[in-house]
Image (cartoon, rainbow, N blue to C red; front, top):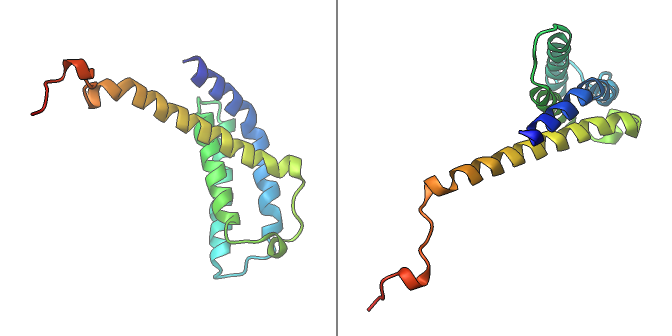
Length: 140
């Protein structure tokens, strides 16, 4: 429980910076995507995701900060995956662009820890533990 609470606190503090970092990563792409280009579709989708996250963040209702970070990093990753730095123009400042990478690491760590917890909890239910060799019947 403490790990999850700490991850949620860290994620909540990272969401505003991740939004700013995502905008910084997407800004150089805005002039390079033409009509009918798949990159434009990815860019418009990323803009919609960022807008949705902002609305949810400012609504005053409870929200899932890790879920927001997952959505932000997925949208930015998809929008920037088919672009090279040369095609995208100037690379954003590392302190802002690195926020999306930090958000991705946090969400990956959280998912991995949750999977590890799940496996540890259900290990005994999925297969009985092997009996020590001294308890096994001899094979002829």
